Image 1 (tube, protein in one colour):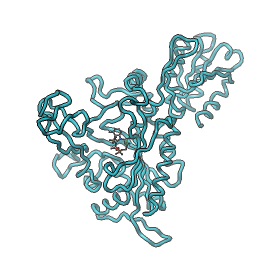
Image 2 (cartoon, protein in one colour):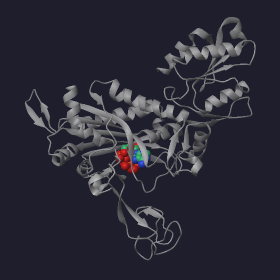
Image 3 (cartoon, helix red, strand yellow):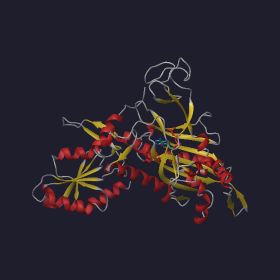
Image 4 (cartoon, rainbow, N blue to C red):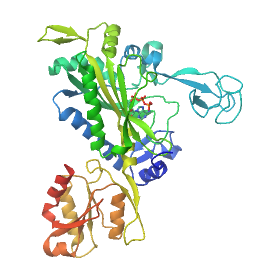
Length: 449
Ligand code: ATP
């Protein structure tokens, strides 16, 4: 039994209704498993990425940022092993033409034999033998579609970091140990995408490669495991829903020296799933690029007058998948004391919330809208605010609760008399009266914690 209820369906509906996430090309019937971030979703995901960038790049002096291109030299993907090995076994049903991963638990029997039954149409003996399917999207550079112009959409951002290792090291004069971080799109022609933004064919990764002296790699591996788990907890993800999964010998890539996934409990049928991988990759990547490019990718250790190929500890986290974890973690339905209607709340970390404060005149008269609009204009340059004068005040509070706005400011009769406003907290529902002139500083202080 899963520990957490399945709320994915409710979340998909809320995300559409409130402008977080829309299905791609919806007016054409939708593109399957492709999603667009709406006005609130783009803010949420951007806040998440900014937090990662701040923790990994800006708050440290041993990690440099990079933004490498999606298209790379095709040899990169031979060196990385993706052309030969980035494959999933696939079976086809000759009857209904559906495709499945060969290890799909819904398949009964061994694909390719007369006993195997198609999980979609139920026919026996129609499933093909497994064949390997490369997950990279292929395209062509320039007007000629021949083998010499083949290019791939990158299936991970990491290779852009490896091939720039010496460019970054020499231009910044960083000394090992140091890291390179980047955020960017990756593309995988997944056979079974699904579960909203959990698994899509186009997604964003936030990856960091930390280059270390061989022999110190396990120390740094442990360090990064802890750092990354703490980062997820600081996002507000419930610690009881987070765990480490150590790769078994079968799961471990042949070159990897150690690998742990950070898993989050998405509830329902998804249950615990990977949101981030922390990998000790040894010198596999830099050595392969040396071999395939014919260019040395060694670090020169000046104090010891020694050259070596550094080992790499990688942290790789999905921006979309973590956005989903944040939404699942934040969603709750509550009854409100003394009220017949309950409320839906996104208990987002204030730093992630797309809107930081709702600003409401209690009624549309007696100078309240003018006061409220002036306050909104003063606060807007400091953080995102939303001015709302429509509907009853309770409705306006509910609308903000549902999109995770941590504070609501109400301008009432007393405001006009003494210049104070009420500041309502989304989670405690407590309201305090403070001077309108202090609201900005009070909210900014709370957002910073
Ligand atoms: P999975 O086993 O779930 O396919 P993976 O082990 O292939 O993931 P990595 O290659 O380690 O994933 O990628 C690092 C991170 O990128 C994952 O932890 C996940 O957050 C994200 N990610 C990978 N594939 C997808 C995808 N198809 N859609 C959304 N996010 C993805």
